[in-house]
Image (cartoon, rainbow, N blue to C red; front, side, top):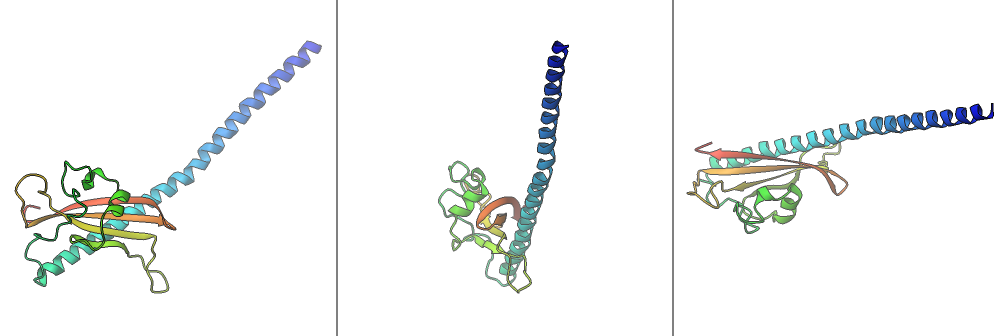
Length: 180
């Protein structure tokens, strides 16, 4: 009889351990769903910011050409920091993360159409600084080939922040010009 009591106790411990393991796994799985949904929402918002940057950049390019301020893309490509447009350089824009690009470029540099531009209006007539875009132009022939001043690669980086911390980015690259 005593032996049976001990085996019952062991069975109860094993069943309890199994149920505890299943419970912890269930809590982990159900807790990951909202976090994943939040990450997807942030990525979608960053992509929307990049798209807003594309539209603003397209309009700025169109206005510069229509107003006669530009006759080609020559002289309006981003060249600073050095190597940003050269594929073999360690600072080439496609080798850098979006955060590294934003930290490296000077907002006043030639070729930067918009830098950290907020675009979502708030109720007070201000713009929400959590959602921004940066747009700049790169010579698509830089680093090799023959430069064609009638073409430019427009790079749009959308950013979503929580306070001052970047939580999501998205990058679009669009070729403009005669061959596009």
